[in-house]
Amino acid sequence: MKLGEFMLNKADTNMYSWFVFLMTVCESVFLFIPPEVFMTPPIIANKKRAVQTVLAAALGSIVGGAIAYMIGLWLFDTVGVWLIQTFATMEKFDLAQQMFVQYGVFIIVLTAVTPIPYKLMAMCAGFMGFPAFLFLGVSAIFRTGRFAIVGALLWKFQEKANLIVKKYFWQLTSA
Image 1: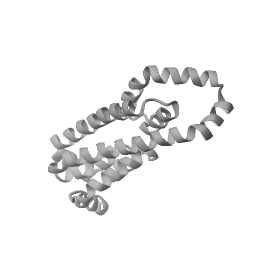
Image 2: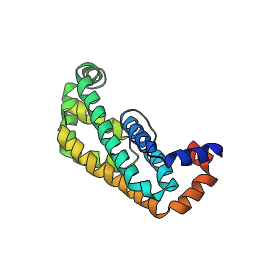
Image 3: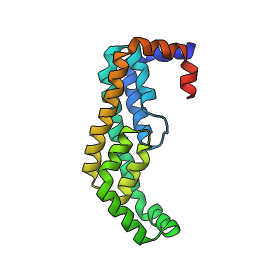
Image 4: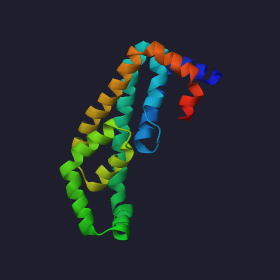
C-alpha cells in the first residue's frame, strides 16, 4: 500500500501534470495503457487539479496523435508499400483509402472516445493520407471531450474514488 500512498502524494504536485502529458504522448504513439490510468491519481488526490490534468492529457494526446500521424505518413514509402505488396494489392489499398476518406471522421471519433487503440488509427490516417488538420481537429475535440468527462466524474466522486483506489490499488493497477 506504500506505493499507492506514494503515487497519490506525488500526484498532488505540479510536476505530475508533466508526467500526465508525457505519458499521454506515449500512449498516443506506442503505449497500450489508457490515459485515464495517469489522469486518476492527481484528481483523486486533489480535486483542484482536475482541469490542469485534463488539459495535460488533452495536449499530450494531440501531440502524440500528430507524432503517430507523421510516423504513418513517413513509413508509407517503405513499410507501407511492402505491406500492400505482401498482403494486398494496390487496388485494395485504393479502395481502403477511399473508405477512410469517406468514413475517416467517424473512425477518428470512434477511436477517440473508445478503448480502440487511437495510435493505430492515427498511424493509418497518416498512412492513408487523410488531411492532417482535419485529423488533428477532430482528435482534439473528441479526445479532450473524453478526458473532460473522465475528469468531471473523478472530480465529482473524488472522495469515493480515493477510497476505492486506496482499498483496491493493486487490483486496479494489475487490471
